[in-house]
Structure formats: structure tokens, C-alpha cells
Amino acid sequence: MHESLSDESAYPFVFETEILATASQIKMLWEGLVGAGYVLNHPEIVMNRTVTAEDSSLFADSWEIKSFFEKYLEDSDRLLQIDGSETCCYFLLRKQDKGEFKILGWKEVSR
Image 1 (cartoon, rainbow, N blue to C red):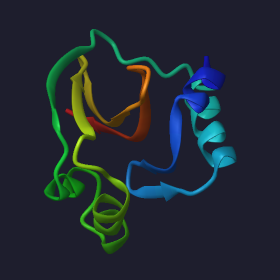
Image 2: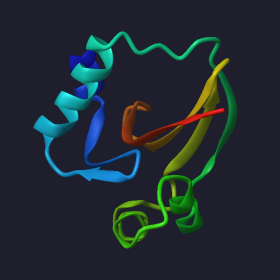
Image 3: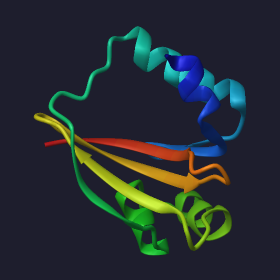
Image 4: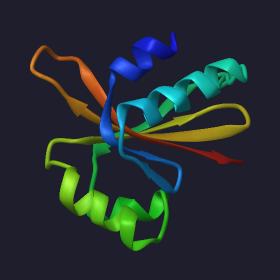
């Protein structure tokens, strides 16, 4: 499972408040989450919209994250909020030519 998540992720990649710059860092992220048994219980998509530069504050109020949003995100990129029973997750997504999506970022927030 982590291999397909790694393949579906782009880099640089925003994870929580950090920027992962290499494919190996992203692979380690997904391996770690899967290996730890991470599960989002009772997921429900509650928001799916175009991402804005202001959305950087959902990840961190830092120069690095603001710069990532300004430099790497495109007008057509999406912000998804998926709520679970105990947490919510934000995903940054970019649609590819064949209708598939690349994951550009992920953050989990406890409720």
C-alpha cells in the first residue's frame, strides 16, 4: 500500500509543518504511517475546493510553507478536508492528464 501512496505523491511534498524534498523521504513517510497501523476511522469528505495561498495557514504559519504554496501550487490544485471520527486530514491534490491525482501534501489535525 505504501508503494502506491509513494507513487501517487509528488515532491516536494508538504507533511504537517515540514517540506519533504525527495522521493525517499516521502516513501519513508508512507511506510511509517502504514507500519504504525494508521487508519482514519469513518472518513467523510467535507470539503473539496481550489486551494489558495491563504490555505498555507492550515499547515503552518511559516515562511517555508507559505513559499511552497506560492511557488509550487497551481491554480487548478485542490484542497480536500476529510473528517474522521477523531481527526481530520487535509490533502493537497493535483489532477494529472489521465484523471488521476498526485498528492502534494497531507496534514492531520486532532479534534
